[in-house]
Length: 270
Image (cartoon, rainbow, N blue to C red; front, side):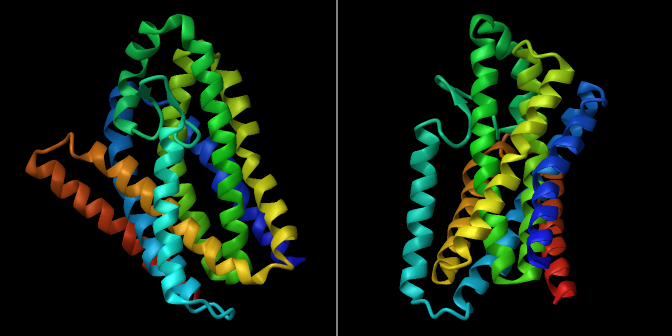
């Protein structure tokens, strides 16, 4: 029962707290957000990659249930390819028509011009964002529960990595919703409801996986493939828009900081 409380608590951190923190950034000026978001993204990249290569993959290989290393490698590959296909099918990253609004934080500053140009599609785009977010949060909940059921410390690290990348994503979603015609209070309300999908996914996974321990290593690898895909395919390309040496150095330092943060958290908890 204690484990269930840990899972619920950190599911709320991974979902609800991320929404609240992201909404607080809306109080900043647009210029301040433009400065803050790329820094958050760089840090999130390091956290996601650190959680994958320092936590999830090693724990999957060392799990008490014996797994074949080749099966783990195949699962990782299939996971990456699956997330690519899902993104193409507009089921994962909230893409709308021919333009992806979510998970490309640099585009949050141009969300107004995009929404203005598609005013008649604004509400539809906002609804699609919310549906996509709910599915995304539900899957995050499953990953958090699987991590906690493998190791308490791994669950905490996984939850922190999810929270790190959710904050800039939720901020981008907020901006899109506002420019799609949603009032600030409604955007916050619907985002909070969407974030509860994390808790629902975690609870379902907890009860479903209790009798399927042999699946845990493979779910951890799916989690790792999700984190790697988000970092490499969705977040890193946006950083290449900034090519000045000083900006590149900032990105490298913040990515390293995110990785070190996960390393220290993982080491300290152990």
